[in-house]
Image (tube, rainbow, N blue to C red; front, side, top):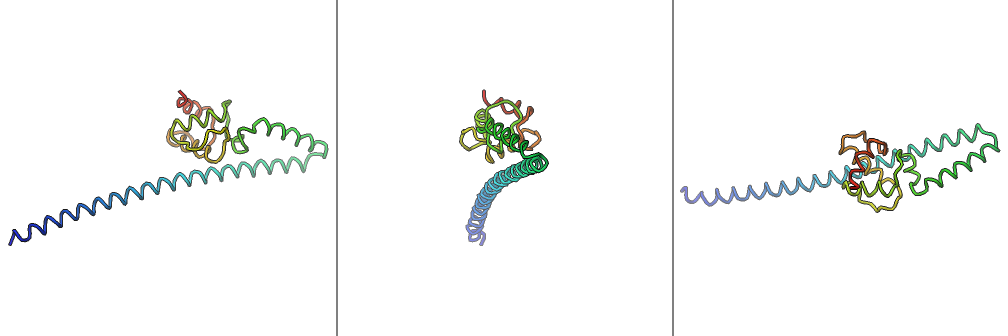
Length: 161
């Protein structure tokens, strides 16, 4: 009697092991998907912060133009256009995020070397670069605000060597 049940018992144990393997595979797929979604969420958060900066900038420009005389407003817009040209390689997002004297290309190369940036090294600081800065800050115990200040750059520039 025992010999008849032995093959059934062995098969039952073998099949339960396969189910465990399938569960592990499903768990790995779920973990991968969660990681992808977290990265997407970080990118969307960065876009929201960028839009908030843009709204704040535009609001202050509107307030300034309302309170200034017409001649002063035209002079200020000329000055603003000149300063925008000074940061044309940084982009409208990057002008608010980069607080140290370093080229956008160096920032992107360092982020790429750190393994947090997958975009092109094109010198344009956009949502992808900002999301990479935030991810870098989080992984290095820095304030994850997406702003590249002295502390973040001191830690990040080590990846250029």
